[in-house]
Length: 119
Image (cartoon, rainbow, N blue to C red; front, side):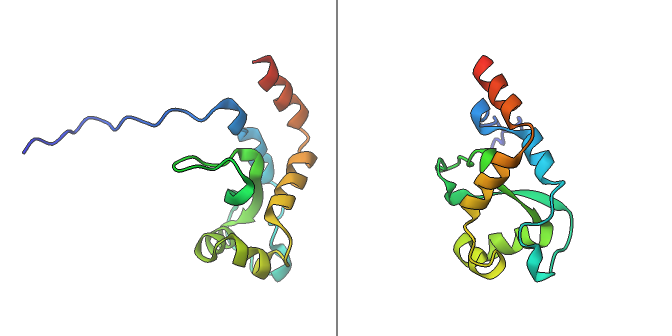
């Protein structure tokens, strides 16, 4: 049997309009969106809200659809699913609406959008 030991080919890169690394970095400096229950644990992470739209098989939603969650709440979201997580940890608030509010509040958004359109 012959084993192919060459490195795996990576998938094609995400389109520029889906990537906003500086936005995710800014989110990591915010408080956990589920902080009200007092169970925050671990480092802050940018959690992608999968049901925000534009997600396909093997395709992650755009970074603009992220909210800040601590590692503990992010793990809980993955374990429980978004619908349950919104009810239990976000007090019934929509994660999609929260993501839109954070995106709008990001100070670097206008520059990111200009760079995207100017290519």
